[in-house]
Image 1: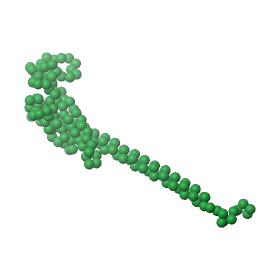
Image 2: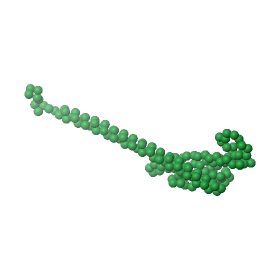
Image 3: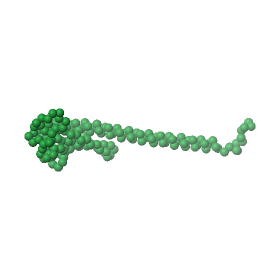
Length: 160
């Protein structure tokens, strides 16, 4: 009993230390929660981009298949003179808008890329398709894929 102090002399130091500890632990908890919400936002953004890329690549394949199925009326066979301006719009599939442009310079056909052996009279009609998709909240992000197509054909007007 000799070690006990009278109640009148206690000043609440333990209470103040406990309150400081509660404030510190609360601050750490808020910081960790805010950090985890940022991680969730980053993960969702990465997921949305990956999903948009996969949708876009599938739609690019569909655009090419639709045009190739048209046989002689396919826009893939258009020459530079048949395309007004620099590009012509292709069919919109889903949220993907595509346009086709011809890469041949002038009336001359281009030699085909990556040929192992040259064949006289064979040239290429070089076209490219630019496909774009918008994604994300408020559709403020875009991805564009450029696909090149080289079509071998017989030609007497070979440049190169």
